[in-house]
Length: 409
Ligand SMILES: [Zn+2]
Image 1 (cartoon, protein in one colour):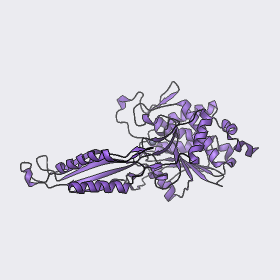
Image 2 (tube, rainbow, N blue to C red):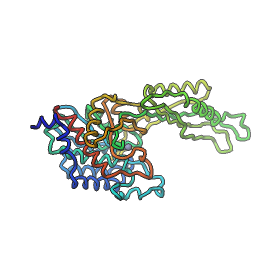
Image 3 (cartoon, rainbow, N blue to C red):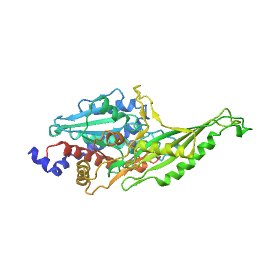
Image 4 (cartoon, rainbow, N blue to C red):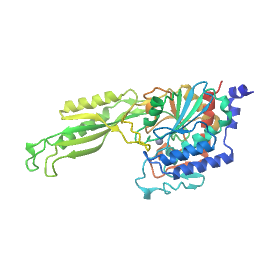
């Protein structure tokens, strides 16, 4: 009887839908998450809230790791490991007056939750928990392990916390599902990104005698112009789109504003499409600098902010592009589950932003896919909002996918 259900997953899948009471709990928990501030590096309060909720709901093996991420694992352990990875942190609110609803109030109006993180990614976070909860009575059916990880510091440094779990704590997922907004569609890739800092050297002189110095800003402006020209020539991938390059900041230094500046730093945001590598992008920039005869050197910036627990992990801000094959079982199983739950075929897309997939798929080569409630275009905007019905649907899908991937077919 048990086996029959698994080979006819749709009938069992129906039983994993949330009942109205669970759907209500899910909505209220998502609201509490929005009401709990969790700026990157300050996720302590939300981590404890999540850990307590997991314990209250009966999840086994709940723990916080040294970096401050929250983890739980369920299943029998005899088989593959599926990791559900969702970040707990949010970006800061720069313009509170522009928000439709106060960003931390977690207003629910007309069956829609509004506020900071509703889309990115607290809606997905709550849905993962309530979806996985549906599997707690069925753990014996899971021939492998379902690991849930709620991670820190994803916004400033995607991949940092999941790398720690895999490289330092021995978590070995066979599949990764990222809970990030996809509007209930599927994401199977994204462009990579690198942050370059180019330091242009000059020579200081009195502002009244500019010919005695070498103006670092003038040399930097030649670089900026060359970068603008290069932008038109970058490769284009049919799935992920073009590589891009943009100057996003400049800083100059000189003895005073009455002097010729002797140093100018130029920050360059480089997005990598499939086929481009971090090393090749750096070499391309270096050859442009030498061709123009600009006295400058190129570095990749680093991230070294401590986590809320005080752990420092230094990471280069260089993240590869990635895409999982459209025909990979992780994509097809997810698509079949979404179809069975919603009655419509999901679109298979890529993300316009960066996620933990840069590490799990981009570097560790673990098949990775993304699914979540909320319109990704609303992330990092003052209009973040997610429909409660979508949270419920996402939870159902999360439960169904785990069962499909981890049960004996
Ligand atoms: Zn996100």
